[in-house]
Length: 371
Image 1 (cartoon, rainbow, N blue to C red):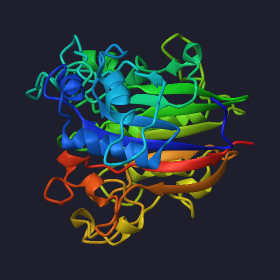
Image 2: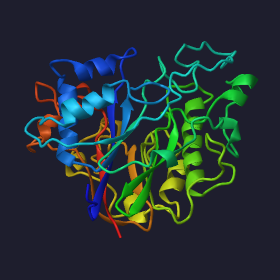
Image 3: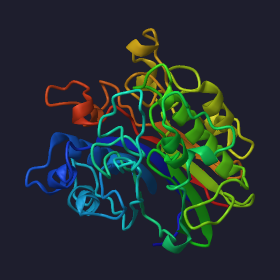
Image 4: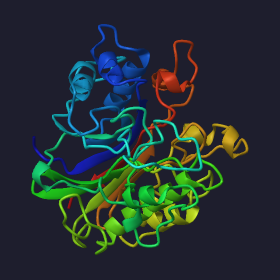
């Protein structure tokens, strides 16, 4: 396709994690699609991102498509939903994930560990909670880099809680709870690296704060990628991260808010204030926001409205962060208000906002001008 002058990059956590292997594929192939799938597809058709990272979209744990993503694209996105115009995503990348991948050494001798916790990344089966990338522009598959196997202890100044993990687990456990990837997108003569990840939530742990520590360290690994750090070794054995001249967009549900919530605010703050990240999108006037979220009283942050929220708890968890040299034209969060014509897209059959009818997250987007 002909390259546009402006590209829309987006992050959207779909909350499509099944109870068992194949659940999401079955939903995608069902003769009558669920309200949630129709609403999610209509949201993407409404916002029309050119490149989008879809978090919590189950697929085979070793990567690739079992048919679920193909069905979502070809049966739902390529068909009008709620009167929206279909959209085609011919280029797709489904990375391997650490979620549900069993760790072959004991995780902890001091705590009862469930099967889902006895894994490199929390998951009831390999591939649960994985993320995928879909694009309207070609993906340079041969140049994709991944850091799925990078061990947690390899991170300088890591925060592994030795009081919780066995010595064997401290040496074997991978850092990325899902994966960390750098995916080249070719737009005409331009190439932009999409850096995608989905760190573990910094909660659901104990006094050792293992998930808090891991979320913080996953963000620090991401910062190392932007720094082109020499300690960062990818899954093919190549050192370093992004070269200084490579334009990029960091996209992901980072499960960390710089002001509220339970995450490491210093870690997410260091990313948002990184010298390579576009300052206006990170912390300035072009941070994605919505008027509806401004008027929404979020119970988790003392009833305050918050325009930059991307989660129904009022937190900013979903990020699209272009590199500084990319010109940003506009940005936003898809969060329609009750009087908006798009409001039914986030509602159940009774007209009430409900995570199971859409997602507990909202789609965040940024428009980038190509030079």
